[in-house]
Picture (cartoon, rainbow, N blue to C red):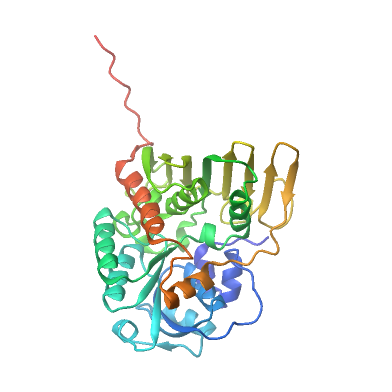
Length: 375
């Protein structure tokens, strides 16, 4: 398997090719047109899988806005029929556009979403969709006031075939009642490929806020928790001294009204893996457990979505090849029908709230002060 990093998805040009690199496989002919959507901000390659999801649901991409000419040229090479506009207001105020998608610089995503909702349109942001508790409070206020959809694309669950199949198994009771989730999100850093904002804590929000938001979403989803708290969290910068505000490691312990969870994320994927990260999900139940190796099997088995189920009878490897990701079509349904089939708004905000609180509350993992002994 060739080496891949997230910016390659932007440089690759082809949206479906980039989407495949993120684990989104082609799903047949383009469905009938159901709504028009636009894009504001192309700063992360996730924009291609976001667009692919909406297109699968019947969305037609008509306009996009980007400040950066190089990113715009790459995007338009895949979507030559889509109009690039010089002002985001041409999208926000457009009469036919119902949904706006964004993969802007993380700290800009919530302000864009607020402007979109105030204009009466629905919004889908790349994760992290919100980078501070202050932003979260304002997004919640505006969402409640307008009644619009503020969706965050937690793509490690929405677009990963193994995660979707695991969801089906848990819903059927295959492992009994869920007790705990363990979510691991290692990433490859490749410093030379990263833009300046990548290293700026104020722009990306911190490691738990950013890539940890995936694991918060999965914890809530698989445990069925509707209320949750951060038990403990820590972050550190172990190997990027040139960027002192950066964080290359983080972990957290969680407790909810449906179970408990542990999250670890890092930027230490070695080049020898041949992929950007060995993402894992383990779900422990009262009658068994699920072990999902999302992107690669370091034991040597080819392909991705290596899903194992261990129950009271046997060990099984579960086929995920026939999975059809539902998020895009469901989100389009929600826009048209004013429903919450893709993800409830409460879940969307709670996953982000957990990530933000874990980020804010985190102690330093890269320093140690011995406790003072009494006497």
